Image 1 (cartoon, rainbow, N blue to C red):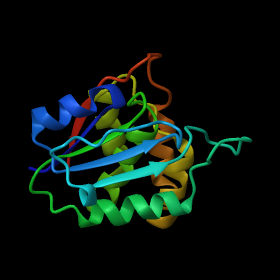
Image 2 (image 1 turned 90 degrees about the vertical axis):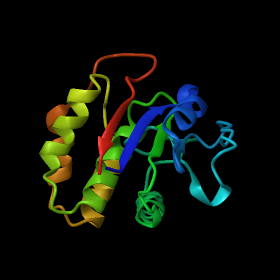
Image 3 (image 1 turned 135 degrees about the vertical axis):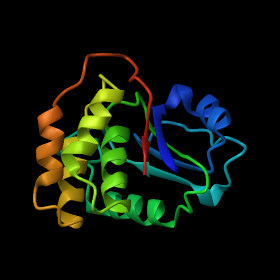
Image 4 (image 1 turned 90 degrees about the horizontal axis):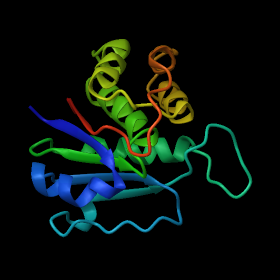
Length: 169
């Protein structure tokens, strides 16, 4: 069964190698350098520059519709033959939001709350970025159900680096 593996930037290379991932989705600040693992072809790596914020803030890139549309276009082209790694800096907020968004987009019949509950069960640190989730909820016409699910699991445990997790698609 195809799956997403969520992790931090620090675990990117090791994770890609361990699970033989075919794709990488990076959601990270524009100034953060990310080295694409050598086994990942350039066209199978999407780097989306955005800050981990939910309200506009001077000097930062607020997650927006264009970012979510890029994400959706990328994950919809994934052949699901091998896993995809989704990461942000800490593996806590942007990447967990992307895991929720991707799962809901690629499996439209799947219950949003069940997906959010699974994310929480597998990672006590997961704290999906609510701005990303809200934008995706509107684009995917989920009528607030993705937002309600993300809000219900709430903020995860404080950490420097998130607990990595996998979610089957």
